[in-house]
Amino acid sequence: METISSKIEAMKIFTEFGLTRLKWDLRKVDDEVLNWRIAPESNSVKWLLRHISMILNVYIPRAFTSNLTYLPTSWSKSYQEDTERSLAMILEDIEYGKNLSLKGFHDLTKESLEEHIDWYIGDEKRETYLMILVSEILHHEGQIAAIIGLKNRIDGNPAKPIPPEA
Image (cartoon, rainbow, N blue to C red; front, side, top):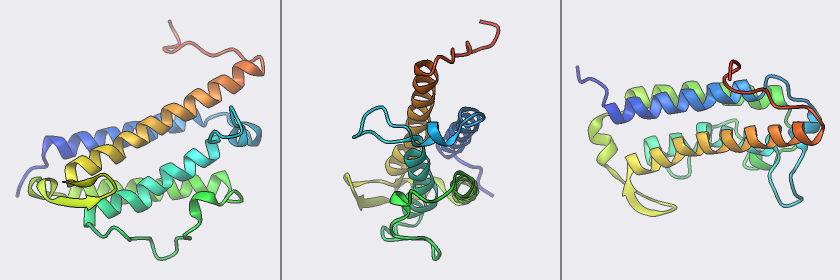
């Protein structure tokens, strides 16, 4: 049996790490912080969480399968804009998508990374699209951490140094 490629293993590691960091970010978050926006045009934490869920449940599976119209059977086409979806439901969606994505990475072959997909940036290797999507998880987790940190500072709650002994 073929061993998993180091590229696939790296994508799995960064997916898991980004989602672990996300859990750390969300330990003490209330509705005010979830829905707060730095500016009227910016995204809220809740919007970014739905976007991460979309990456895991829709976009990564599309990249795995090359089915660029894939949408889970029970998925709403307006999921991204569903402002009524609770944090608990979004986090369940993220956990489901994490498991789906990690299984998909496990099932990938080195050869499948070389296959081309003609998607939103043009004809590129599957590897390129998957790397973009995994990096999006980390990117948006960072945005969430920044929003929460800024809101806490504005509200007079000092940041805790990381690492704690620093």
